[in-house]
Length: 92
Image (cartoon, rainbow, N blue to C red; front, side):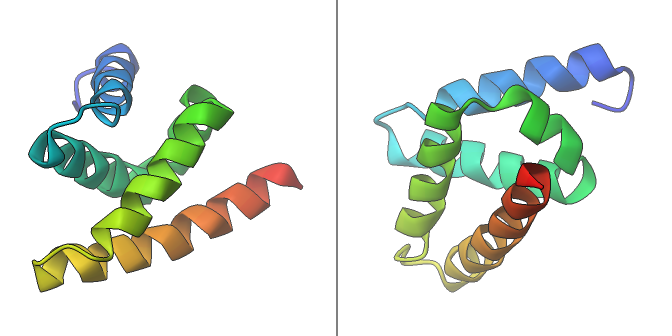
């Protein structure tokens, strides 16, 4: 992903598509990838995610707050707070 912005965009768009998966593991890994990505590239996410995908991302992280794995729950909680902050900044 460090080679070019184009590759980064491809990986991010694929991960966004995987959020629509009915397979819990795929959806979880996509959300984790997107979560880590937002930490390092918050503008890229806001440029690529439409309102439907954003709602799905928030919903996925809310669901992950109930995951059996404590680390996933903690990550989801932090990501929801971070995404709300990024979302609020982008609306200004």
